[in-house]
Length: 346
Image 1 (tube, rainbow, N blue to C red):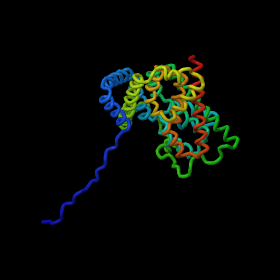
Image 2 (tube, one colour):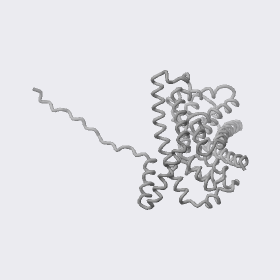
Image 3 (spheres, one colour):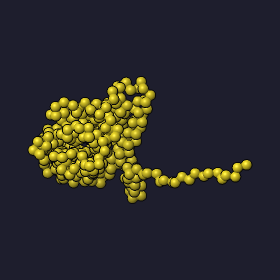
Image 4 (cartoon, helix red, strand yellow):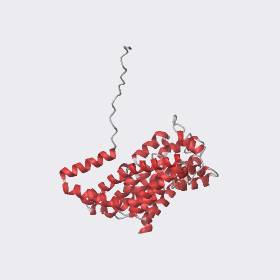
């Protein structure tokens, strides 16, 4: 008989990660239930009604994102970075407005493009336009703010990309952006790099392959959970805005549609912007409170590119001069988009 003691595996307990969106949402509802029970009920009803109203657009946006992932349509971005540099900037801006990358998620792709030898100017065009619009964002924007606003934001995203791309090209030609575009030690983009250098063929009928069907299901599930929590939080915050923010206050700050109100909305978007999907209901609430359309456009464009998480990601991989140029073109683009849209809609 063996006298060896049985081995006992000891596993260290790790605390589950808490999601900030769910924490904030729970804290709001619990606080309302204690301090203002009537408003808690009102906010829940408001959020449920808002979610029901945007549900068809939300479902379509999820399906579009999952389809792009499963079919490999995201690999088409590599084709935008071939040819003459002037055309590359144009195609990169257009492709950026169609690609499913957020302001932080686009960073590995940018690193891959730059380390693959793609010129900085078209990369900057893609960099600026990509976080602002994509097919799923277009659908959600149309559902929350209207089709006209969605079209205008798409054109603004392309315009900001063109401004940044041709602006970088001009700065390079006068010698203001000499040197490598990435900081020392920045990697080559990993998986994103392989997609850029060796893009796989797109399989539009993805359902014929089990792996692609699984990718569709996983992407749809993950995006539903991610976007759903932010939309719930955003609609809850909108309900509080409707209840507690005086209409005259928003109108006095950003209701005239002048340059100062548009500039203020651009600057406010930097610290307060969460993500593109969560920002839509908040902006809709502000517009109902009297925010000018141009100021709303400037907030969405400026915040989408220069929000604190996005800015920190850019700061981490670029030299200081390039970081300053990135912020400058994003801010100028947001101001221009707000002014033009305000003039167009009156």
